[in-house]
Length: 305
Image (cartoon, rainbow, N blue to C red):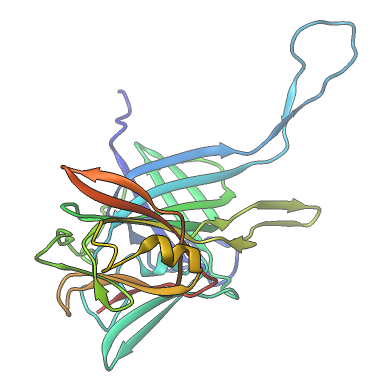
């Protein structure tokens, strides 16, 4: 019987000891409700032996690296309980972020933490085959576009575990919240406290995530991050917002995006954003600006409240 491509399920658990299977160690597996699941089951480099043996053609190769990569996108949505993190919150702990829950006010913040060492065990079920990734760390990006519902994309690299044939589990997606449409009814976007007409906002944390292997050592590390963003807004009068002068001045500005009412709200903000060189665009006959943004250091945060 043929295997079905759409039969994909991802489960995960936070590791208490790096590289040791957290699920096998007794941790409760959480499941990912998302889309665009993608797996590279044998990533890495190979080297040819290149013998001078008098023969033409290809030489045998040896895999000199073996690791696994996985990508998926989840909804840019809030938490079932503002006091607790969203279902995607634990995933951020393996992407150089900390998760801070607060009861008063009822909100959760997801901030960059340069000293974070969190890692995940990922179980990627693919039509009867189980691809396990231990010691997984990664990066994230997000997209928010008017008339859409937004998404957070995660990209993880993990240590290879031999593939096994198993039955799929029955996933529990009860922790995941249905997203709200991004638009005039639910959303807010401000530049230095002044509302702007946002068409789209794209952000990439751009973690550097190399696979390292030495004698006696194997680890996926996060060695740096270079966050950038791009916003597209309707172009106001220059007297209202001169984006060219702001870019030339090189000053830092505060951006705040939120979607949904308090109690079912998700958002992103940074008080340290530099404007880049704006270009003109068109949105159904309306003039727009596309502005590349530099997000300085660890200044940006996600929030749910």
